[in-house]
Each structure stands twice: as structure tokens, then as C-alpha cells.
Amino acid sequence: MKIFITESLKELLPVLFFSSLGGTVRLINNRGKISWTLYFAGILTAVFAGLIVHYFLKDFEISENFKIVAVALSAYVSRDFLEIISERFIRKVKIQLDEN
Image (spheres, one colour):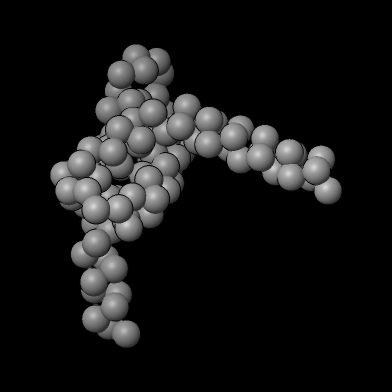
């Protein structure tokens, strides 16, 4: 059990770091007023988007560098990324419900 947790943490550490970094850069580039609440909400959103991309790309045969870049970019555009993903998911669910 301890080895599994260590391996999982080892795998997710770069994802968490680069997701947080991407979210931080987005907030800095906003040039608006930044509060701690907005900062932590932005980081949580960025990490969530980064994790989604990480697990999506996990089984593909692509380089680790490409995966990290994809994670960081998804974190940078996390709000837009999650909006697009959720919109497409909701559209597919509505189509499935209409067919039944």
C-alpha cells in the first residue's frame, strides 16, 4: 500500500506542479484585482483541468514532455477548457436522452 501511494504521488507531482504553475500564470496575466480566494479557486480549477488531461493522455504512447506541456496549457486555459468539455458532454447526454 505504501509503495502504491509513493508511486502515485511520484506520477502526480509534476502534474500538480505544472497545473498550479499554469493557473498562476493565467491569474497573473489577468491584470485584474486578485484576492486569495480568487487565487485558490483558480488554482483548484487549473489542477482539476490538468488532472483531466493527464488521465486522458495517460494511456497514449506520447512523450512525457508533451504530456506535461498539454497539462500546463490546459491549466492555463482551464476555465475555457472545462466550459468546452462540459458543454460537449451535456450535448452528448441530451442527444442520448432524446434518442431514448
